[in-house]
Amino acid sequence: MSLLSDRILFLDGEAIILDKPAGLPVDAPRDGSLALENHLASLTFGFQRWPLAVHRLDRDTSGCLLLARNPKAHKRFAAAFEAGTVSKRYVAVVEGVPAEDSGIIELSLKKVSSAEEGWRMIPAQAGKVAVTEWRKVAEKDGRTLIAFTPRTGRTHQIRVHALHGLGFSIVGDPVYGQADSPMLLHGRFLSIPRGAKPPVEATAPLPDTFAAAGFGQEMLDEAGL
Image 1 (cartoon, rainbow, N blue to C red):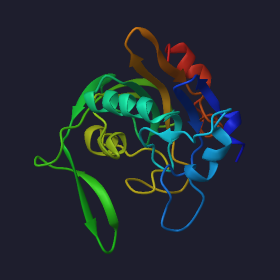
Image 2: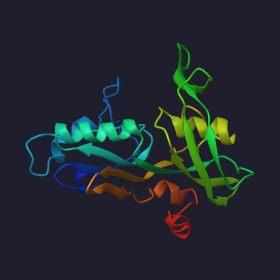
Image 3: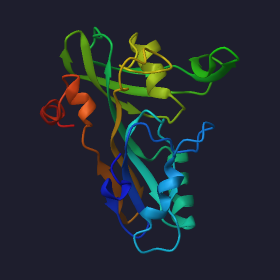
Image 4: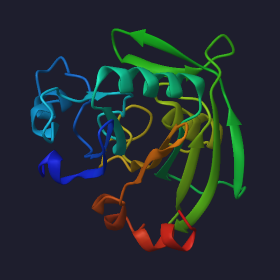
């Protein structure tokens, strides 16, 4: 894994946007493996204080992750996520081809847990509202590259909406699909408004795992993504 300091997409006095590699958990896992916190000392860039993650990306998801460089900024950015004013776009490859070219998935989600399977999210009327816009970008060999724009920020939202809203799991999803390859889910774009100041925003390059599966950067370029 390359140095995280080489994966900075945005940096100023308040914020860092990091291109988080797949396989790196944001929170320290129970198995004791390395997590983002083990790298924070290398991301100070002249500040004494370590930056703090404002939101979460799943361990197997790559892409744009926002870190705040001071507590005031962290509070403001967290409030922006809570208020839904943050713009996020993900890209993923799913195991099938949806009939439509675009749509909106509205499936409320709740967390369930069992001793056999551990925890996961499922669609449930009593769950928290979850809404995701999607559009088809490219098709190849019975799989589809899709751009997902979540309007809400629920745990595993895109992964569950892909499976239960589109009918296809994300390639390599170890919980909702088949863990037979790297999971092809990537936080492509992130933008956080800052009032009169320019937004904190960045676009993360597509990982090599997508190109290895036949879905290259040129497909996103053609689609303006």
